[in-house]
Structures are given as structure tokens and as C-alpha cells.
Length: 125
Image: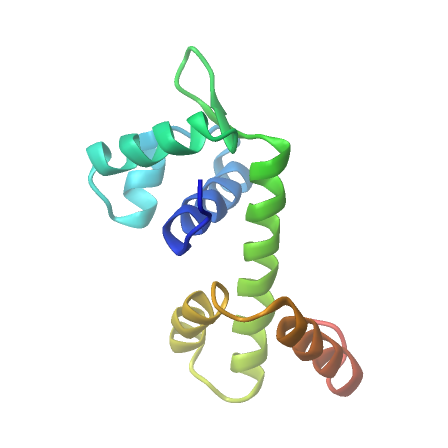
């Protein structure tokens, strides 16, 4: 399975909802992402078949080790980029939207350089 922006967003959403709700179901993801439940069900099937999530008999979705690794990477990128843009004076709502676009495309090298710059010039985010 190719990890694309959509899959990364699903995994990140599962991570965030897990922290917020404890247990995550497809309906929670659909509500959070404003998607229809059938679309989420198809995505969850693909993520499950490719080893990024497991689904309990009760319908609770859990990230596997590989799913958690991707989700944490994307969440870190989103958080750091969003905070950085806000520090630069961008409206927080716009910063969050832009960070969501950037987080999937920025190279690891560029992201690490941004992190180093932020940590050296403005303190840790």
C-alpha cells in the first residue's frame, strides 16, 4: 500500500481521537473528518489489510506499531508547522489548514531543518 495524504490523515485522526476519546470507532472518524461512514469504512478496510490498524470485535480501531509510527510523524509535523506559522503571525485557523497541506509534502530533510531553526531561534515548540 502506498502511503498517501489521505491514509496519513486517517492515521493522524485516529491518533488524535484516541487521545481525546480513548476508544475510536469509524463513526468517530467520519464525524471528525466530516466524511460519510461508507468512505471511512473503505479506508479502514484498506488500512487494516495493510497492517496499519486493527479492529476489535466491538468495532474499536487501534493503530498497529507501523500505523502509530506514521500517525506520530504526521502529527508532529502538523503541530510544529502549525505552531511555527502562528508564531510568524499567521491566523491560527489558517496556520492549521496550511500545516495540513505542508505536512504531507515536505521532505524529511527540510522538516528537520525547520525544526532546528525553530529550536535555535525561538525555543522549543
